[in-house]
Image 1 (cartoon, one colour):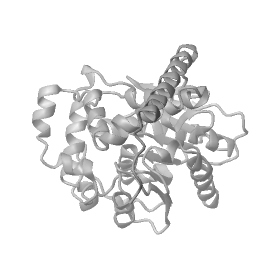
Image 2 (tube, rainbow, N blue to C red):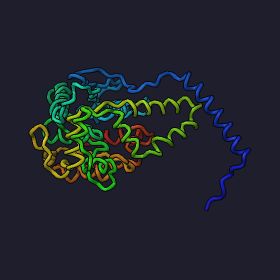
Image 3 (cartoon, rainbow, N blue to C red):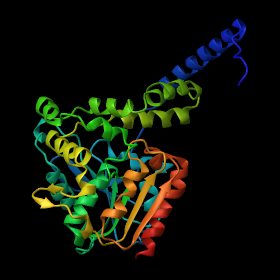
Image 4 (cartoon, helix red, strand yellow):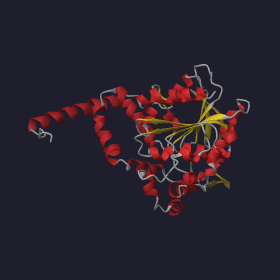
Length: 355
């Protein structure tokens, strides 16, 4: 057993004085700190429809790779997580390796998007974006990099239009939504999603955020803010913290009909893994995915457990399937120092082997 905690009055008083001084210095730093910037790489809009924008990142490095990469992010957060800051950017690393990188930004749905379906996103906006990128390369297939929910969408898209995808890469992508350690899935099993959508229309971002934060309430609602007192006088660390906070709370609402379909068919019925998934009247048949597939997952992921991602191998038809496990969590795989050293070089190496 550990020894007794030192709670002598003079020790407590000194701790409180020290905390007060850190808070004072931290308040000064916050007043002086400029507004944090996110999405640091230069980019240009090359296509769009309604709120969706298709971006091409402008690189200072000569493009040497033969096939462009199109990043498909989730609907539930903003995609600048992959380009958060200068030293935490998957995009910048891929650009530096000579890749031509594109990104779908879904925008912020409003009441006019209430009836957007999964088919609108997958056979509509993703297909449109793939086509726009492909035309810049003479109609050749592209490399698709799907992240989280965007990875599940990418699997569906690729099974419908395999001729348009040269290589498929998925990151922290849920495939089996019924693994025992998937707390988010367990929450949704008894959800009356029809009542929720019919009542609210679009699903508010604040409601979604609250659900995610309460999966780890001590860590995400208390511990990180207590830890903030240790970096209040460090402007670099404070700016890093604020960028993450900006991303966490800068979330779009969810289009009601697409949310309804995703919860029912993916979370509740687990149709992506078990079969029977139909989107826009077309059956999703992952066995049609025969091109090379790279699946990247995080070992401490509380939103998409490793087993949920690794199920991809069992549903696709590709004989060229690779996995990369990352020692970190769902967010760390984008922004941690280890992720920056490991993930983009691994993607680049895997793609170069298949050029």
